Every structure is written in C-alpha cells, then in structure tokens.
Length: 232
Length: 232
DNA sequence: CGGTCGTTTGAAAATTCTCAATCGGAGTGG
DNA sequence: CCACTCCGATTGAGAATTTTCAAACGACCG
Image 1: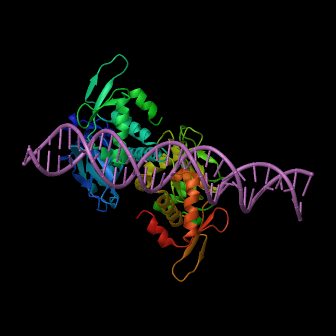
Image 2: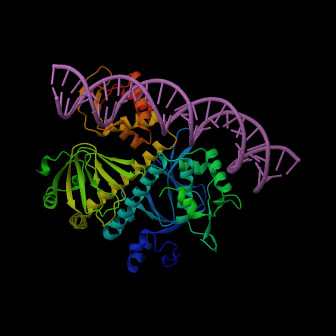
Image 3: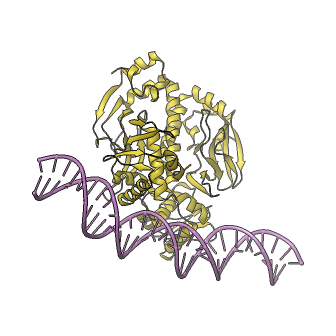
C-alpha cells in the first residue's frame, strides 16, 4: 500500500514529512491488520514496536485486578502508538474494531527520528495533545454525572469517528456512527456500570436525542442538545 | 544561583546535559520565586514561557464553571512546565506552596532544543511519563472508593515529596510530609467533596494509619497498611 | 429449538453529596 | 491579654446518585 493513498496521510505523524522523507520512512514501515479484540501491546512488556493507527479504533487499558479492565484512553485513526525510546508498556492496547496499523520497529524509528528532528518535534506535540486529552478525561470522571459522561463521550466519538451516513436535515446533519462498543465497554471508559450506561442511553433515546437503529450503531438525532448536556 | 547546587540538578530536564551544555542553557534561564496561590499559566492564553519546577508544588487545573476548579495534575520539583512549540495553554498552573521555578523564554528554549536534540528526546520521555501518570489518575477516579483515592494520594505524596522528618521506628520509617493542601483542594484533586475527604481522613486517623500533628501536616504512621488500601 | 450473550428494567443497598451546625486555631483590634 | 472574627475542619442527617443483585427480554448461532 502506498503512503500516497493512506487514509491518514494528512493526519498521522507522517504528515510532517516531505515526499522524499516519506519514501525513506516507508522502507521501515509495514502495514498490519489487527482483528477486533486483538491486543497489540501488553502492559508490563517491553515496547518493541511503534505504529500509526490507520483505520479502526483501539482502547488503552489497565487490568483492574477483579478481572475487569479500566479503559484510560481511546486511539483514533492517525494516532501514534508506542515510544521511540526503550520503555516498558504501562498499559495494554487492544483493537475495538477490525483495524489496520502502520508498524515501525522501535529501534529503526528511533534512528529515523534522530535524523529528522522536526518529526520528533511533531511527536512531542502529539504526546502533549494526548496528555491534554487525558486531563480532559480526568475532568469528565471527577464530579460529573453519568448523563454528562455519556453525552460527552457520544459527542466525542461523533467528532473523531469517520461519519458513516449523513441524512440531510433542515436544521443540522444527523451523523450515525458505529459505536463498536458494548455497554460494558462504554462503562469501562466512563467509570460506570453497564446498567447505568444502558439507563442513560435509554433516557436519551426517550428524549429523542439519540436512536439505536440496529445493535451497536448509534444515530445522533440532536447533536446540539447532546452537546448542551456534555461538558463545554 | 548556580546550576551546580540546583536542588533538581539530577532530576530535571537539565540532568540530560553535559556541563558545557548546561552553561549554555543557563544563559537563557532565570530563577523566579512564586508565591503560594499565584498562577503562572492561565488556560486559554498563549504559552510564552517554559520552566522547571525547582522547589515547591503546583497544581494543573481547569475552571469548572461553577466557580470551583478541577485539578487534573500535580507538579513536583523536577517537573517541566509548558511546551517548546507555540501553543495555547489548555489548563492553568498555580502554586500550592511558595515555590521557585527556573524559567526559559519559549522561543529560546525551542532553539536550544533543536540544537540539543537529545534533550528534546528526554522531554518527549518526560511527557510520555506524564501521560502515563494522568492515565493512572484516570484509573483512580473511575470506580474507586473515596478511601482508596485518599490513601493512594497520600502514598503518592509521601513518595514524591521531599521528606521533612523521619522518626526511626522498629518496623519502618514514619515520614511526616507537608500536605500544603486544604481538604477542599484534596477533594478538587480526587473528585470528592471536602466533607468526604475529611471523613476519610478522620477514619484513617482513628485506625491509626495517619496523624495530623498540626494543621496541614500529615504523618504517615503505617505506610504499608496505607499502601494496602491504595491502588497497587 | 435451546443456549448464550448482551441489553433492558426493577428494586434494594451502598456510597457520596448537600445542607447545616459546631468546633478550633490564627489573626486582629481593643 | 482577652474577646472577637474569620476560615477551614469536623460531624451529623437526609437527599441524590450509582452500584449491585436479579429477572426478563431479544438477537444470534449452532
């Protein structure tokens, strides 16, 4: 697969590279398909690979001891995985959907970054953005009600996920997004039980803000009202 | 003040520098004293400065809308503040105690980092460590009881704060640390009301795990029992 | 058709928040 | 030096929210 037609050509770390640099990087990259539920990084292990998320969705999790996991982050297409420096993974990374990633052996990427320091600068910015994002999530979990958490999560997903269908409307677009998550997984992300998630979604549905046409797909019927509920 | 006697010479970003590089960096650095409660970065403003925390304690906060703040991170001596690239601050940074920081104008530090890419690499590692830390905090806020949150926080503070006094004991050391935080501020960090924080601390005190000799100082009487309660 | 798994819904239990009163130390002014 | 005030800490009681336990439901699959 050529970088020229890469779906995240303009979003991933590589977007900071000129065409000739991109060619060079491609030599150490290989595409890899990842099946839903498959874990590509295990907490506690050495991080031997780095990667860009190309398509799909991943979760960053820690084992909770009681068998369950806590999700501490979501990775969308264009996001970077791993560290160029030798390090132990603090969290596991697992595919939520069938996905594809662009993999680099860690030590080779480390060399490449040293030779292309502007890309390393971009990676730093990305990491700081992830830090800001994690802190936003802290704000979401502390003090916020279940309804606010769920609404914020839905708005977030709608913003970052590739929109599948758009039904034109007099007032606004109505994006329908693939959730790809069970109620339990949403609870894992939002720090709620699956029952509470279900209850909130039912309530939002009764109020006409969202709809569940089939299974795990969710249609956002009233995005502005949902944003109203969500964190500013 | 000379870098040679800097309290965080071995912990801050600068620890990655050789002596001659350190001399060079010193030209663009200046020490600055910050009074308790003083805010050095405001959310929404342009980040014109970077800095190392030398002494004291800072909190990273976001306004919550109802007048209160939510603390999303704590900065200890040696921690880095700001971003070398132009960016808008997403959060405010405020001193919890009288503190001192080592300030660099952003654009000058940016140049320095470009010329000393190994330091930029270290900064990247630091930022990733902060990200991991923020994610640990997410784990703490999601699903955890008030007691676990408080105990984890105390153990964390005891680990990262400079110990003020140590009373030798048959079984273990008994560090007494300066909390520097009101109950309300702890609640701000842990996503709890100040009353809940107070209740948990009273309970821990009755169980003989901690003591409050005077005001905001806390003595950890049984660190292992506290760690037992805290997150692993 | 039966079984499994995720969802939905109900009701009781547990936890935390909110409101309110009291307490205690630090600082101030007479 | 003492009374007074202010602010944070503590403690109690009821309210609100969420979790837990349980049951019922429905879709999917062999």
